[in-house]
Image (cartoon, rainbow, N blue to C red; front, side, top):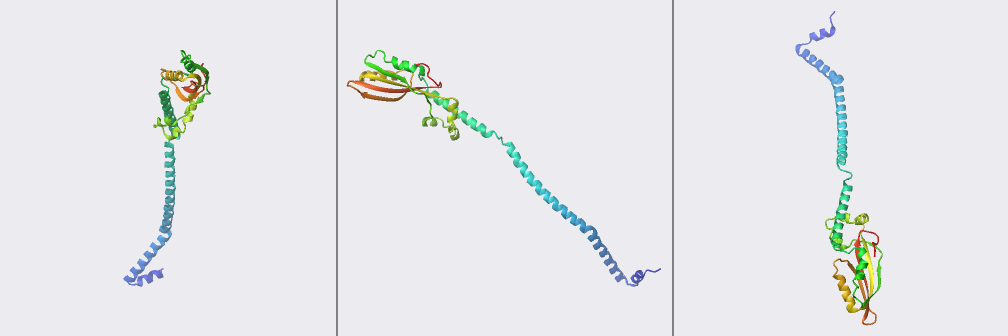
Length: 231
């Protein structure tokens, strides 16, 4: 049985047959693209978009991990160690300052005895009163700050903490004398010539009945001991 389509095709000349054959081939290719290649391309585009999205998420996570890693590298106790180091430096500077000021300082237990002993062989002087004054904690002065130039400002603000840990006390004494001017002057000169020293706070001089005069002398020394050790 003869196929009518084949008969019609055979009737055509060679050029027409080539044209029809080419058209059929193009149609087959188009159909193959539509039903096979195009779905694959759409799937590939979707995969590319998904990969790009995943890469963006991965980059964000990498940045976050790097940030956390840097935070972990930094020692959280570093600031505490620096503060402790500054306080240690301040403590050392205060120790040096105290040693500088306390060279040959008289100990509190000797003060009253020395102040009274200097009166020996001075019959023209009358000791009216010799008393100890209330203890006072040492306060940092501008001089101590200038002597501590290597200590940072933040550590200087913590000076009270250091002094609380290792306090230093001022032991004060008040002497009231009555006598002639020359005897009083000699007494003060002898105090200044002592091998052991102390700090002079104030000197009040009054003429009672000439030539008798009256002086009120206040002095102090330093000690790390809270409390009076004798005298």
